[in-house]
Length: 326
Ligand SMILES: C[S@@+](CC[C@H](N)C(=O)[O-])C[C@H]1O[C@@H](n2cnc3c(N)ncnc32)[C@H](O)[C@@H]1O
Figure 1 (cartoon, helix red, strand yellow):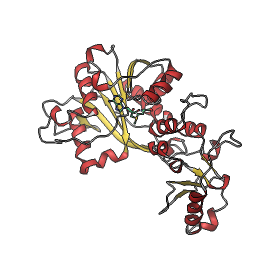
Figure 2: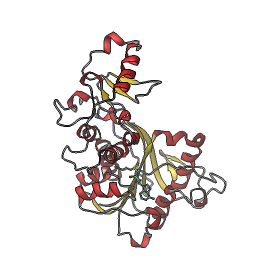
Figure 3: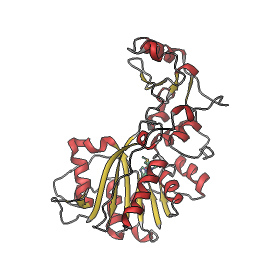
C-alpha cells in the first residue's frame, strides 16, 4: 500500500504505517525544523506548504494520513459544501481526497476538535467527508460530500499500553461502504511510566528555585500529600504561580506543543528533581530511543508534543487492513 504523510511532523504516521509494509510516496510539512528532523530519520525532505501542492504532482497513493492543525471555519456551515471549509488546512485534505479518491484515510486531531465552535466544526468536517458515519447513513449529505464510509472515536494512549494520558480523535475513512470498522480494543496498562523513566540520564534540565517553590507549595496543599509526597514517579506539570498539576498513577500527563515554549510545560519528576528528558518524551510517544532529533531543545520538545503516539496509530491502521479485507 502507498500512502502520503501530510502535516508529517516527526513522522509518527510514517513509522506506524511502514511497520505494516506501507510505503510513503509524499511527505509535507512547512516547518523547517520539522523538515530537518524528518530528513535525519527518513532521508526525505518534506519541506513544502500543503496549500501550494498541486494534486497532479502527487504520486499515486492508496491512503492519506494527516494530523492536521485545527482552525476555525470563518463561514462555517452556511453553504453546506466545500465553501464551508475553503481557506483552512482541512480544505487541502478535502481537495486532495476529492480529486484522487484514495481507498483510505486516517485523520488525527486533539479531542477538543469535537466541541470546537459548539461542535459545528466537527460536524462540518464529517458532513464534508462522509455519507456514512460510524455505520449509519449520514442524513446531512450535500452535493460536495466526498462519499466516504467514516468511523471516528476518541482514543487515549493509556488505554493502549502507553503510559501517557493523551486523548486524540481519530477519523478513518473507507471508499468501500460495506466495511464495518472497529477501533482497536482497549488493553490493560502493563507498561508503566517507571519503565520509561531513565535511571541516570546523562543530560537533564533542572528547575528554577522559584518554580520549585510553587511545586512544594501546591504539593503541600494537595489532599493526598502524605500518600504522594515521596513517590519516585510523582510528576508535576503545567507549573505556574497560580497552580501546579500532579500525576501519581505511574502515567505521564499529556505531552503538549507548549513544551517548546518553556521548561515549566515539560513534565517534572518531583523527587528526582528534574524534567523529563527528550529520550523519555520519545518513548512516551512510542518512538524508538535512537530516533534523531534536531540539535535544538525547544524545537525538539515542540515536535515531540505535536506528534502522534506510534503504537496507537499502528493499532488503528492494522484494524483498517483487517476490517477492509473481511
Ligand atoms: C499536529 S502536527 C502533526 C504531527 C505529526 N502527525 C507527527 O506525527 O509528528 C501539525 C503539523 O502541521 C504542520 N503544518 C502547519 N501548517 C502547514 C502547512 N500549511 N503545510 C504543511 N504543513 C503544515 C506543522 O508544522 C506541524 O508539524
